[in-house]
Image (cartoon, rainbow, N blue to C red; front, side):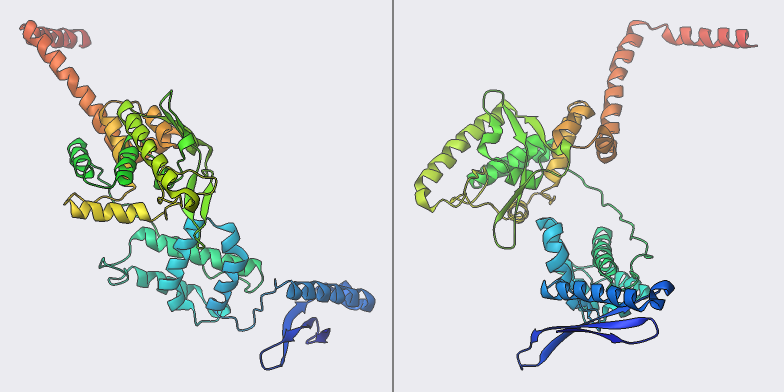
Length: 420
């Protein structure tokens, strides 16, 4: 049953029944409609038709489960609508996990009980300010959140309130006028060649799959998701080229979400050193025997990942990071993030004099400017080292021509005379 109730001079309330609750009471949904067109207000027939059309659309929304009741809706109640009607279908799995973690631990405890239409810009500013205080970081690390985490929480709130405006739950977003927190990037110090040797020595005592993965990360500069998305048919054994065409992450249901890279440049071919190719061949034989022993218990479906559980199931995207952190601690190695292996790969190539364009292509950057911005300091240092090699050449020339200093002085005198 549906009806239209007049509420003011130019406003009406639409009422649609949506069944019964647990106590047998009728559930009613309401929506206010305001008509500002004066010609429409003067024509009874056209006005009735307009309101009936609005009532039909409203009824369809309610019956399809797409209606969001804004009256006295709490922030937490809207977040549930946002997750079901937007986040789960529009955001990447990794992004959803990050958003939900921050919502659960920080945003919802602060805003959850508040009515969404009563949250003001000052509330947003106060919340972000609280995250910048000591003690805001959760977990084993003490202190305050990094500037990048503040930016993420700002981004989450902006996304949620933008949907609220689009769905006409609120008229204006309280985040719209709030300036995005500036991100102060921490200096990343990758491993140097000596530290890499120490890392490789420590790896010899670790499980086979981790040993191969870390070596491959260093020699190719692949991202974590790209490493996990590698399948055996991505290797050309004859040319020694590895094709990067996908990444993988687990959904909340434990299903492998295999997808193409976001950018065209991320899909690339990376040449492998012969030693790495040889080790991958041995590792392939090991994984083939492992799969043969699993038999009917295989869970890899049509995928044949290089790095996965013995039964073929994809690794969780956080697993390499968790293992790598424990590995470094176990062997008393300097802590770096798993992603820093990618930076280590790049800086090793830079120090060997490899052109920035080649490094950019191996890393899958959009253009060489991205590489220059990230590794500018290392490239400048390498350039200075290259310039320094000319010292030995010039010095050896000076030794062969001991009168060079006199020649320089004579040139200066001659220049002075001519200039005057």
